[in-house]
Image (cartoon, rainbow, N blue to C red):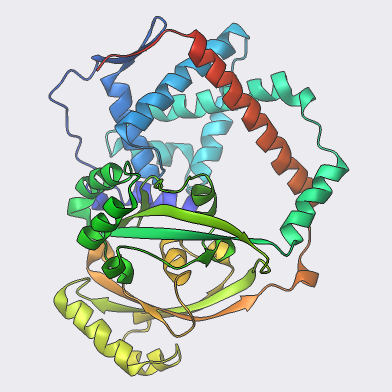
Length: 409
């Protein structure tokens, strides 16, 4: 999740129809779960859900939030017993670092959250638990994680190897204009629970706005390296039939189901930059807007042709640029991954759904292997963090098994 997207989520909260706090009919402080003698309240669940949704983060379904709050209680109990406490200055720095991802100060970030009914304590607790647990895991297991040159060499060889991974994926992208954003997200969370390919395909035909809807959302075999970086770890963590958590993108929610995965001998492709053009059409996904998009598509074969379409109109009606893959917005990157040069997508919208994005891929510039610089320190850090995360997950599983955990609803 990029800082830009977090900042947009916070500043544009009202546009996302989240600025009106709806008080639940039930008691907000009623117990929802219990970890030993500590209670998790309805208020905490609703606050964490709203907080994650503002961030555009995955894992915001009710069941997922309750489970993560249980894990937080286990983390807090363990670190307190170990005497690990975050000082005021360390916490302030942690809050500042988190807000800085959205290019905001802590005060600005807190004000943005408050406009959506999210308490400052929700933000502080989220950051505090994460940082204390990180410090505890490093202190407890850091000496047991030694990354040697051989492991780094293997990781470098894998990155430069000739083998590649391809995935067979189905997609659903549901339009979510501001007035319907919360309803669509709930619908997407329900869809994400399916493990049936047939059921997912039926949902795609009913709800998806992509060109693949007629095929039940089915996409062809795709090299994992062609997909945007936000999707790769999500898909690699799935088993066949499983679905990603809802991924919030501007004016839409995306879901992806992994149907199959395979390793090939084809070289894994990487790109230095991707060039694309976006022409903006008033009306969004109305019949008139889509009809205009079809008419333009019939007249253009390459990105240069769009200059003629945009002639005499304001300059901001057409954007064209060439960016490194990691700098391309997630929703645009998802669509570009499905296109060949000269092909068009009309799935996306802007301006609260009122503007249709006529998106065309111009071309991809391959990365030259001789220009690639391998940062061995960065690889070692990544390997170390992976090892520490494995220790963390094992410890949490042990703590949960030993604790008296009850779901009370």
